[in-house]
Image (cartoon, rainbow, N blue to C red; front, side, top):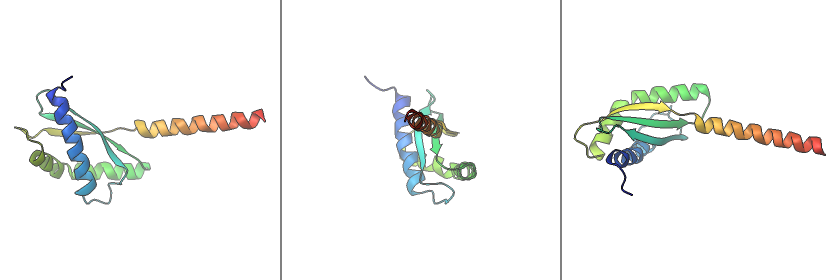
Length: 121
């Protein structure tokens, strides 16, 4: 099955943005545990929504958000150099907390299972 062009461009942008954040943005407010989960492109390729996951406390997350917004011009410029597009897409960042929520849920489940085992003994 052939991927739609916007999906292919989104996959390439995900790879490029991950590399830029990991290797080129030298801001200590961006932790190593920042992941680009997905990039969704509009059909006309003029807008990109970048889904990010940040592990850390609320203060670290706020600082990371500010750092990424501060570097957004640099990131957009670098993406344009590396991904061949006619127009530079406007990049929107969405900070996804589903991984952290999943980890908290797993922790609660583990705690409940432990408590049930202790009661059963």
